[in-house]
Image 1 (tube, one colour):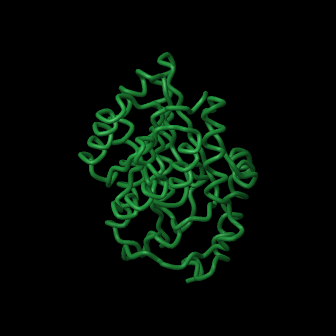
Image 2 (cartoon, rainbow, N blue to C red):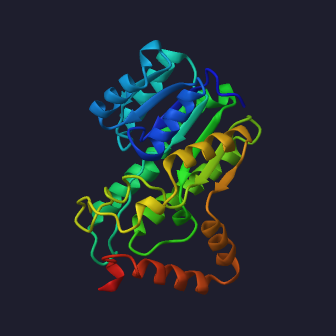
Image 3 (tube, rainbow, N blue to C red):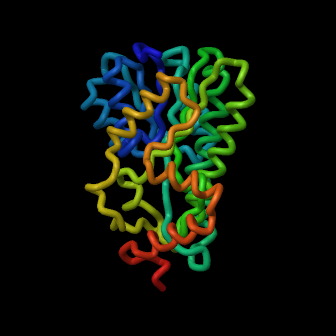
Length: 271
């Protein structure tokens, strides 16, 4: 697939993987629609990318609001007349044990990660069917195996993957590509913005960000996987091994994950 003049919607486009994807598609001469909650950030980025020529626009969007997602699709069609690629990237994480976390925190994570994907995909689907385009879900190994202290995050990614797999099968004969890409631990703001037990951003990351996968690398993998019409892409060897051993030695996987997350700085498992 060539990306020239393809119309691409990217949610969560104000930072991290979403921003890297927007940049990558703009560099390929695509028409990019950047969606995020922060209008000021989007406006600044649009000037930085010199979008005045019509190659990209921004639309303030809270993916937890159904009407916002419908407006995102409607405004894209009004501007460009088609949708070729939808990147469901908007996401949020959390870090707290289930016994401590407030229910509203769990709901918020599900609203962003799962329902945001459902809303945007639902409204964009007729246009993607028409263009025989692509739906992408940015997922995680947490969608394959639950992670301690990330109950809602793991549940939301598993739900998103199940949803997108169903959409893929429903559209097998319609020429629609559905790609689920698990990026692994990526250097972004997601851990700083991860919610604690009370729903406040934890501010500090428990991981060495400089050693993690860069958002630009993830974006390159997204474009490459779309071009090759991939169904699934698990970017890290660690993730691939985990999924393999999960099927044959699940207890080993559980214990390995427990030790890894217990050794994080200020891990909730250390209580």
